Amino acid sequence: MKILLVDDEASLVATIGYNLHREGHQVISAGDGERALELAAEHDPALVILDVMLPRLDGFEVCRLIRRRSAVPILMLTARTDEVDRIVGLEIGADDYLTKPFSMRELMARVKAMLRRREMLLEEFADGDATADAVTDGDLCIDIPAREVRLGEQPLRLKPREYDLLLFLMRHRGRVFSAATLMRRVWGHEHIADTGTVPVHVRSLRKKIEAEPSAPRRIVTVRGAGYRYSA
Image 1 (cartoon, one colour):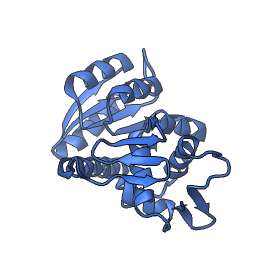
Image 2: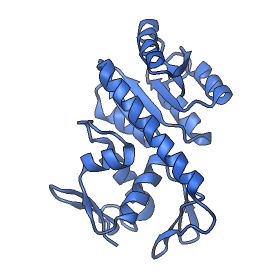
Image 3: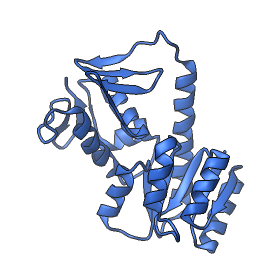
């Protein structure tokens, strides 16, 4: 796979690049945000590993601009531990978040999971056809072949992982899934302890599909157990 690696720490780029090459990937690297956007447009990578603190254009802005035109998986790296930074990254379209310092083993596990998930989605799309059933709940409709969601006559702009999460929950309505299970089934992560990504995406989805996001009726929280699509 072709992977775009964006970080201004040359030693870290060399280390990550070496490990990605060992796994058979092609690595393209950039040391600033503007160059990252140029390379993303030129090479159409399968995955972007993106540091937050970058010269010229920070990682949050790079993520936002990439997400405007592409559903490429984005893994953000940061030296900051503030949860607000993580939430901001996820809300602007990042698929996952890793805080420095991290083990190379964990990074490679996340890369593998994100690429595996990407391939699964591509296969699902390739196997689809115009007659495939949509998933509906009242005025909420998912057009699976087109990967489009509508609420009444209004098209919804969902981030790629928001779409995946909504489709999974609607396909399994009535069943409760823990955050860890959703990380495994939707994100493709097998052994990731940090499940904070899930509630961030749930909150964002509720703002888009619930009449009253603070009192959700579609995606509900089951205390101590997880989430359920109950409509």
